[in-house]
Length: 105
Image 1 (cartoon, rainbow, N blue to C red):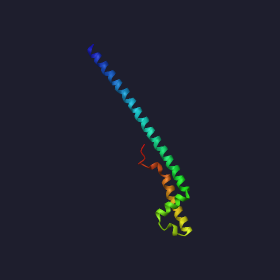
Image 2: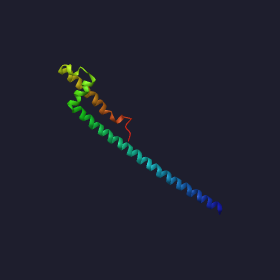
Image 3: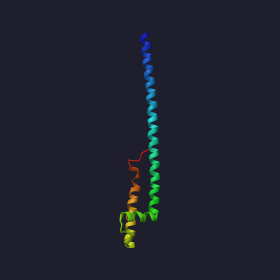
Image 4: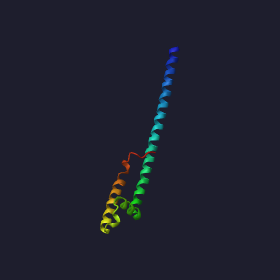
């Protein structure tokens, strides 16, 4: 009789541990999903910022001037080429935002 009680107690303890383990596993899955969703939201915000950066002429001129200090002295076609290169790089970065590894939630 005592052995039966001990076996039932052990069985009950194992069941409780399994239930707690499953509960913790579900919490971890929810946290991971929330983290992924938050990262995706941040990536989408970054993409919108990059789109705005690609269309803000004042910003483009400032970036080009920071990159090439003689930007203001360049001919208009050379300035346009540099602006085009800026947009190509911005587009390349924008297309790869999902691969950023340093975005933390």
